[in-house]
Image (tube, rainbow, N blue to C red; front, side):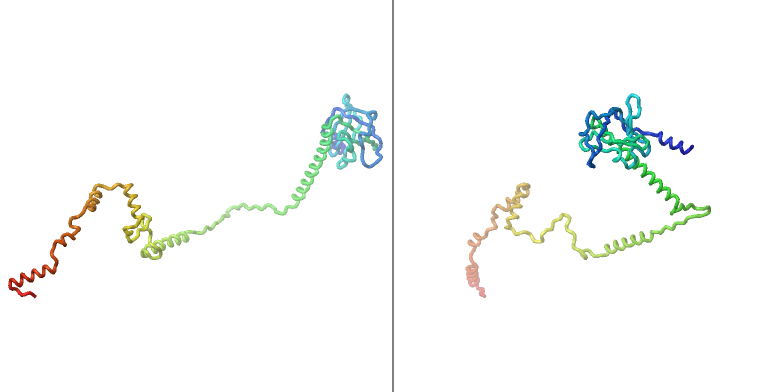
Length: 291
């Protein structure tokens, strides 16, 4: 009794995937070739029923039910088992709005009828509903497989849990290395380097530092007639006008010195030979001997 009640609960659980208000069902001729069906061969006089279509998911099985829209009575049903969609619902070769359904009466008898939708979007939704049911079954099977693997892993515990908590009376000792010696050695090295620098004589081990101005002066003065020096002095005179003392000194230098030229005085003086002769005469006249 309990097993039958569970089966009834499973069968009573249904999920509606799609509802189309009006579809048409056709009586189709037998298929002569293995190429497929063509809806162009169906005549309007072959339409045998029109009503509501409902796609229902019942566990692993998907049902396409053709019902009366007024009363809800079932006209026919197509059962799609897992992995048998192509055998139960087949598309036609010349249109996307028509299909061929394999209907069953529940007692082992089946027949093939044509199914037509009025709009293309309704036919598209019909295909999507069937695909959603297949995806749902795939997800459920993956969940069951994962759950089974987890159950197998839980039965065999490779890494058991180890209690690593300290017991009463247990202590932990941590040894930390002292790094004072390294710091003292570095300070000693710095002191030695500083004393060595103090004892080293100046000018040994490198060149002398340049003067504070950054320019090295030449030990010899430039030549007096250097054109570069003349240009520099001219520029300096333009930017720095001479003071009163400088003007006075330049005037003195430029004025003629009466004692600078002694040539006229030398001409007026007697020559040295004449002076010597006059001296000799005077000396001889006075009675002095001339040497």
